[in-house]
Image (cartoon, rainbow, N blue to C red; front, side, top):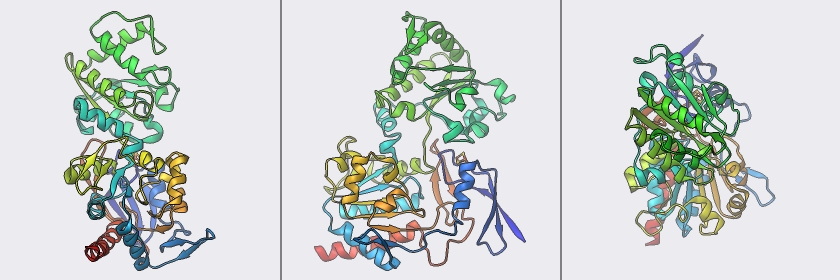
Amino acid sequence: MTKTVTDVICPFCGTLCDDLEVEVSDDGKQIVDVYNACVIGAAKFLHSQASDRVKRPRMQQPDGSYKEVSYDEAVEYTAKMLASSKKPLMYGWSSTSCEAQSVGHEIAEQVGAIVDNTATVCHGSTLIAVQDVGIPSCTLGEVKNRADRIIFWGCNPCHAHPRHMSRYSIFPRGFFVNKGHKNRKVFVIDPRVTDTAKMADYHFQIEQGRDYELLSALRVALRNEWLPDTVAGIPKEKIYEAAEVLKSGRFGIIFFGMGVTQSLSKNHNIDNAIMLTKDLNEFTKFSIMAMRGHYNVTGSGQVLGWQFGFPYCVDLSRGFARYNPGETSSNDLLRRGEVDAVFVLGSDPGAHFPISSVKKFSELPSVAVDPHITPTTEVAKLHVPVAFVGVEVGGNCYRMDNVPIEARKVVDPPEGMLTDEEFLSRVNKRVKELMEAKK
Ligand code: SF4
């Protein structure tokens, strides 16, 4: 006999789908099948059942091999590393719960660490733009029920947020858009013909890195003022037409992603996109939203915001919070050799940071807390496996539109395995003792 757990949250992307159904064995230990999730989400659940899963902490030996150690030894190593280092980097946080993040920050405050999350290589530039010019945004529910003009700018939800379009942005029938897709005009701005672009009513195949110009041109076109014949490879007639279509809608939304946050002009692309949204509000109702990546990167920014006032790149090394991306951001600190230990939880910088940073990381004392074996765990001196948040332990998470949703536990973790929060709480307790002894 099996039973079905309903209203399960998917702990993968920022869409944070909350309608999954998971069939589990009667004893609540095995996942049998996952319904409603996209292929990425289903894989996350099924991966937790892998037979070769690491179940105990592993310490790297001088010859590169691994020796299994106990959780007690792992706690001791981590606490000593953090307490004895002058300026440790505590990075990641986007694939764990807000509760675990909060305990991690308490440790960071005691040891004077820098706390940074994956926004540093993702939507950090968005956060800078929002601090500069504000943001007229909304929730995904409003998009579903009202939006008749949708822009995907530099993002490809077909591949990165697969159910975004069916749950919120293109296909669902909403209260005021009851014909679903038929009521909506979809624009995609992307240099490539992506699968998302193939579904669009208008695809602007922009020249790479020239988004700032096209955003400015659209703002000019809204007022029917002069434009050169082409802007960023797009003929002016198309830009004037797009401006008219956008103005004629009742509710519009710009979704944007890495194509603009990580290309030439970075945060200035975003402040220009926000200003375009503000301009469009002179004609109709328009909002803008970042396509946040990990399922709880938004939560990490929220928790850091409540605790220290800044959403990422928070430097606590002087006993109070300072924030200056470029100076206090992980890659800049690693590349300049300004940190002397690295603690990673809920992220994989080994795979996603530039090789120059990974090289520095590999030379430092380091701990990686992750249920999976990843390039990061293979570089770190100590790998601590933990339970999967959203599969084996619940916790609070924030969707890309800043809506908090409580993740559900579906099955038990392997016997004796700690959760992120349990491991961090034990490290926190030990760090307190070590810091007291130092005084
Ligand atoms: S769209 Fe994202 S949150 Fe939804 S099931 Fe797929 S990976 Fe999970």
